[in-house]
Image (cartoon, rainbow, N blue to C red; front, side, top):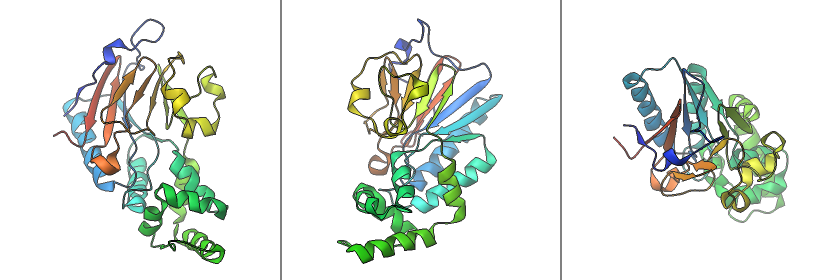
Length: 255
């Protein structure tokens, strides 16, 4: 069941409440991190919300970090591909997808990926890297991942976008660099930035909707909304519902 977003009434863009074009509803989904069970539940909740509150057009915007940490990364990607074929969806890139794809061509990044939860992703594809691999074993892990990754998944990763802008909202995985135009942001900042963005009161001209930094509750600030509620650890996968100048939320801990 949807509920109001605390503090949303204080958001302003150009002195007015931020809004979307008439007739459009956006469902923005936070970091999934291999929790296909929570994804499945949330997608069902979204369908129930649409049935209860019909709309002319709904778009699902997924904010990245679909893989790593949770135990079902491969299954999560399968489910997202299926969902994208059936519903209008925007899939953004997270830093975890960036590293995973980079590991296909740069084995020097594999150790970093494993520390960030890549071990669980590899396991979901049937690959078991050594705990303290030597160079030959790292090469074997890279080759095994190459061979295990379905072409549909490779295409999905290759199609991910760095950002999506609509109405008075800018959707991105991590955030944006203050005092830099949104059209000039680097991929590194869009996928990785934290402190410089989170601590800034800079007016970006749009409300930034992001994930990347887990919080216990949806975090609303004058220039941004963070919807990463740490699903892989908390069991709470959160969706921000935007329609007109109204904001609601749905999450997997609500009925």
